[in-house]
Length: 193
Image (cartoon, rainbow, N blue to C red; front, side, top):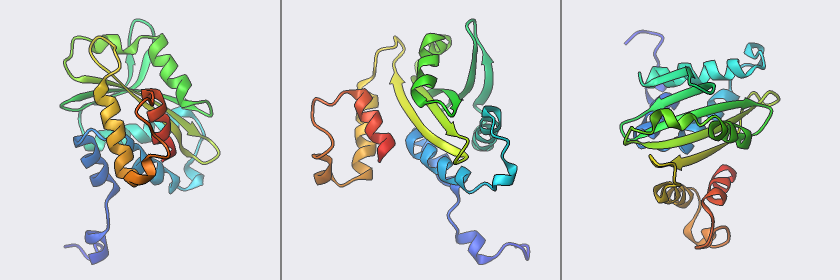
């Protein structure tokens, strides 16, 4: 072991390893939480406060973990900011700076970015991410699952509920969620947890 690798280096939690595990288990919410913390630690001197700056950071991080990530994918109606593919999911991502995750999701919908992947059997997931130029990290995001025919998947709701249950105690869940909670509201709860 080289002299510059200390025992602390070998035992310290590695964000990249944890994010890779999150992606392997199709837990995009956890991966984005880790990414938010990671980016919050970047020195402010490196910041140029553009959407492309944030897109580049995310692309490099995901590219180091998997070869199945592309940026600026041209379609008939525009360019997708990023697409990440796993064995079971296709994540179509749109980024915004100082706007909202809702606007990013709206662009995915209005430009019909998922149509390019319609014949693929994997679950399609829309990911809208908003960055803050003030905090220089992810501000908020929305994760919305779609099936091949663009119907909201109950699997996404189940995944969201599973994430909520892991994040807060089951008895506290009664204060936030009831059986009639809409999938969009579940995603909003996730961003607040």
